[in-house]
Image 1 (cartoon, rainbow, N blue to C red):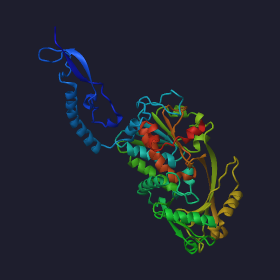
Image 2 (image 1 turned 120 degrees about the vertical axis):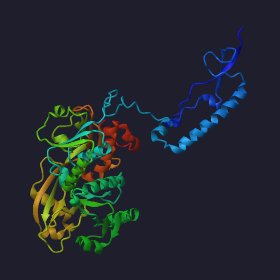
Image 3 (image 1 turned 90 degrees about the horizontal axis):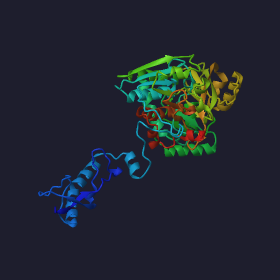
Image 4 (image 1 turned 60 degrees about the vertical axis):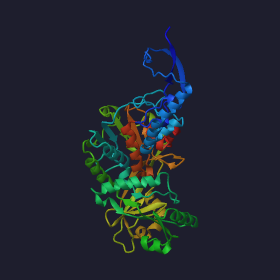
Length: 492
């Protein structure tokens, strides 16, 4: 009868997520002394016919040798951990959090339960809307896809900087609320927007009108709020007393105010958009970018966009006026707000200051040295305010900011535009980004709801969205910014 011997084999491998760092291999359980025996026949040389590792030693001795064998594995593990960054996704898996589905079979809350999200790579992209949102996401898509042979087409009713609410915006870039509080993602927004403005300035240097602006106060409670801002954010905000404000801004009836600088700017938005479009063309090395002026698409968007594998709806109010959104527009957590502003000639009045001043409304310089922009109304009714009503409302709300201008200046024109204003939530009014429901295109994304925070938010949210589009993974946005789906919860 053939001799039988105990063969000690490794148990099944334990794949611990914390150890899944690319080049680190799973450690067999035998290395930890987790052993089990199994009787297998052997030949005269002591080699098992199944080519398993044979060991006739006692279990205790086997465990000592297993521990010895573990030493190089531990050394390799420590070296790899010291050398490789541990990704958030690995930590999430190790802590038992939900793992992502495979990249080619992802689902998303905006779709029905069980609906598959397309696994399409963004090769042929259409961006509907060429304002702040559209140009921001376009530039950052091109920048992150250099040499990837991406084709990107911006579809708009007008040429760059010549239409839409973005082109009549006040151009005030700063990260603070009217009460001087730092808004959600304000510092990151200032950083990314400033980077885009610096890039656009290479092509359109006149897009930056001023490198500082002033928020004044007229109540004691507001003084307390803004002095706190100056104490908390001294790199951005400097408190100025009444005399200093009067000398700089020409505003006599104030209790002082903040000078906002170090990244806070006044932008001429139409010129900035033209510069950013030029930057898109420069960033298209290895890619193709086009601007398509289209006024008469109307209701046939599904047919128009069928040639593209990825679509980004970033048209602001046009998404609703042109009926681009269908199911998404039902109980959508946003509303249309009309804003009208007055461009005034200073007539070279003595004592008129050409600085940007905020206090409820705003007074801001324009490209022409003898023009100042005053804005803006917030109109929720279907019927627009008349010119006289616009004049009266803005004068009543901003007279103390520029009394000389109101008394002796003349109106050049009244501008008007619609903004998509999101509902107020946990962090105030936040932009709306994420996958669309797919009514018009199976692989479509939304970027809207910038409202009056277009300058501070267009850069950072364009950055977030462009990365998600390239990865074709909406969930990647939520890893760092888990509240981005606030608008989908509102819809539900």
